[in-house]
Image (cartoon, rainbow, N blue to C red):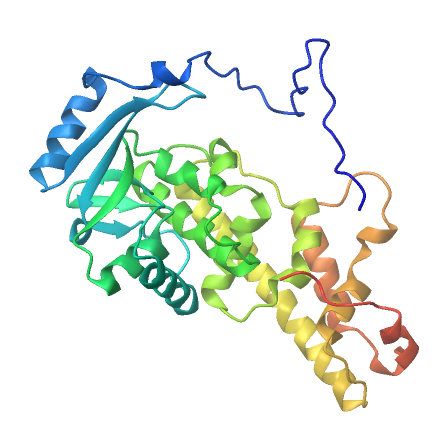
Length: 324
């Protein structure tokens, strides 16, 4: 078995920083992470946890940024998922409940932030649901005092891999939530939270068409969709407009697929084939065209596609489907 490629190291033997990573971690040693007393920034949060019937089990500083956090037991009925994360998968909850039933243990704390009516978890929807189904009265949580972490934590979510639809819907729900809380902040300020500009447009499109084959369009969108340098309240309208352009393209592609089927061409990858056929980016050297220009061109080509000019061998050379 080939060995894993090792990261380049500095002269001191430490791994070289990855491109784009600017973090300078603290030099706190393990014993220094434990806090014997509650720091001022956590006192109000501690009181809120106790008022809700919870209990603070420990206070500590996390090792990278030195931020003070609480490890707490929260009443399970006082915790709800944030409204912008993905929908709970019943199959995943079933898997978790069976594992917990077998081990008789709960060993994976959630992240939680304080809300006016309790607590919200941005990354523990499945674990929370499983505990509630099993009848637990408490859930262990790392309680973060800064509410904005609820949006940033999705970038660290490793509970279950997202597919494109789940991720895009999480992003659009987060977008609408942020637009209501702080509408004057620019969309471009949330690049970390949204991960990719294309996910925002796809999310707005998935809201209108849940069965959209977003994976067929994502590669093209990634090359032309950029973050908007305008407030979120205005960005909502622009994203809805872009989403509608994408749905118009999807309508044209679907119509072309039906024409190919009527001609007797069958393949599970017909839609991906049509999208690749009408996408001019592979022939463009240098900077890609603007978003509107590309989608208008692809829509026009899809509407004008002549099924008589498509051969069976063309489909055979097209390969598999786009990642969903």
